[in-house]
Length: 109
Image 1 (spheres, one colour):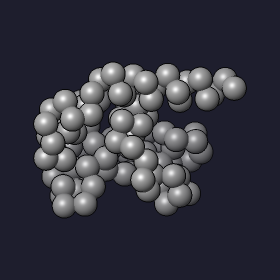
Image 2 (cartoon, helix red, strand yellow):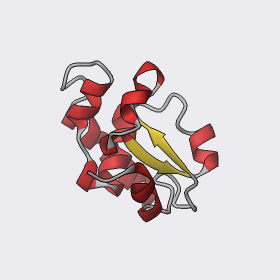
Image 3 (cartoon, rainbow, N blue to C red):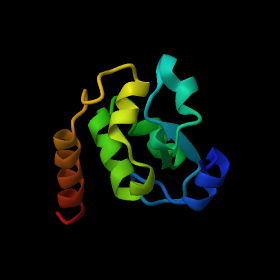
Image 4 (cartoon, one colour):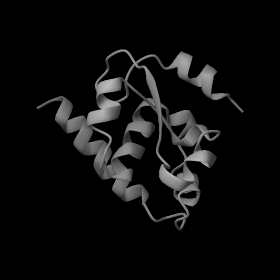
């Protein structure tokens, strides 16, 4: 299992905007954050601006889409759902796929 510091050093760009990354965000926040600190499937690299301005209120499916695009090796939607104390399919693969499509279309429009 990869440790958070090593994982973060390898991923030096913000998953959201592509600028230099400074933060590692956990998809499972709030009371579930302590578990997420050791789970690579919950980590997203961001710059400070995106962490503060764009992630607040961002749907979990979209956060998972960024994870799938930028770190497919550690993508585990069902594990993230369980860590958030939800059913394994609370956020579905279809929802994530739709967000991936929207993110990719947005890059070319």
